[in-house]
Image (cartoon, rainbow, N blue to C red; front, side):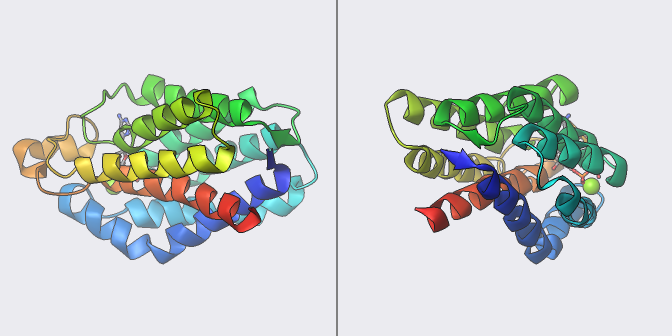
Length: 211
Ligand code: ADP
Ligand code: MG
């Protein structure tokens, strides 16, 4: 089970990770984009954190919907609509819930992933956040299907997401600003895949702290 309290802590932990990795994410984006990914994400998640107290007594779906709206309205650039869509689609699957089973969490992450796929129209291997998110969600679903706990499934998801993030380095970018560089995008890790890995790792950190 994942409680609402853990979801709130996840968002807080992710915001802190983003703040601590702001310069790193921006450096990654400087190499293949326009050097603003850390700045964008930090601005968006600072705003999210300022909004959380006003929705903390609501259900998980309402909380994630607020995250989505806040990100869409406060982040310019590709990552605002993409992360906004992730949280919007995730929120609809958990509407009204105060806690999540492992199947609920899988459904939530899968819906978020499908939202990013639909919105950004990138494919696996295009060197985007999907290359971290997709293998992580697949690994989570597989682990749950094999009867593992949420914590064990999340450990596998984060390992798969980390590998997916690292695997973006040799890829040629096919979507977003980095795609303008073509072959010159090779040899750099994708910033969005890196922030997505941090998002998954933050959830694991929270689950581990409660176990
Ligand atoms: P911008 O590219 O507008 O400056 P950011 O720098 O905040 O926005 O985000 C860049 C990240 O967005 C990329 O590293 C990539 O992971 C992600 N991204 C860009 N386009 C897409 C897309 N079509 N689908 C999925 N992710 C994308
Ligand atoms: Mg950028």
